[in-house]
Image 1: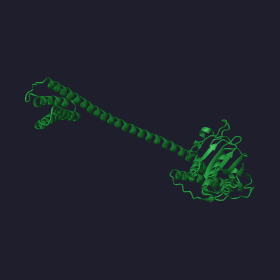
Image 2: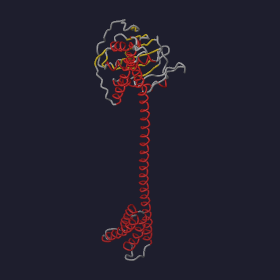
Image 3: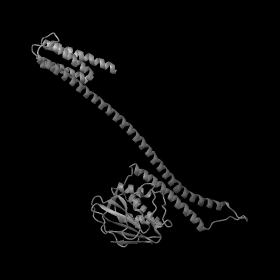
Length: 407
């Protein structure tokens, strides 16, 4: 193909010079040597641009012959009478060859640049493909980690309650089937039966919460969490949560501090109650019996309400405070190796809480406790459209181990 293009270039060069010479000869009475030289130079330039330097040099040499033979006296010969015409002929030859070389060089540079561009595009595509493969590999790696974490959660948080349920049910069944040597059945006392039935009930609830957490987390990640917003009062939400959490907090003193004239909020009360319950549940898990758990609420600014739950347990390390809201992440709180509190549960609670808070337009974080050791988890909720502040009745005792303080 390159050879065919080369011969085509020489042919076009010859035809172009001959055709231009013929046209100029027809109008020889109206043109001068300068016009002829520029016309032939234009042909050389076009040939150099399209076909390269070598056809352009051939066009230059042919153009010199035609220029001398037809347009420099004595006409019709290759001799030159006047010295000035020799200078013009030589100048034309040098100019034509130079123009051809420069144009051909510029064409080569353009071709080289185009080849470089194509090479860069090829390398970019290779790099992009490699990056996509690496991203895919990283995605697979993260997927495997997620599967491993989910498997670990399922192994512990489904098998453990199932084991307890199985053991309790097996014991109750054995009571009905086992007899003594004398043929009299062995029966459990009422307290033992009640204890086993309570185990079954609690573990069933635990399984239910686990499955509910998985469903809720899936809805949040899919962006399908539907909030049923309505006007509510923080006092009522907290009171509902404390009543539900009473079996967990019976060995703790829960103190509630809610600011006066706290405005109503336009939220999903059930979802917000789940956030507060999760925080109280974590506070119970990570603090010793007999310690205090403080639930507080106050206005953060004109548009937000801030709710916090703090305990007197060990502190979550600063470097882990952001990660505790990741799904399936369970942090060990600070402490000596002998007394550090190992995490329980699936690591979904705070991830779900974060999703609920952010779905309301708020945010959640962990900060240093105001006084002493412990952990303080804070989240905010937007107030919504303005409503008149709601007065509350002071000093309400919610439960046997719960006191209430009004600021």
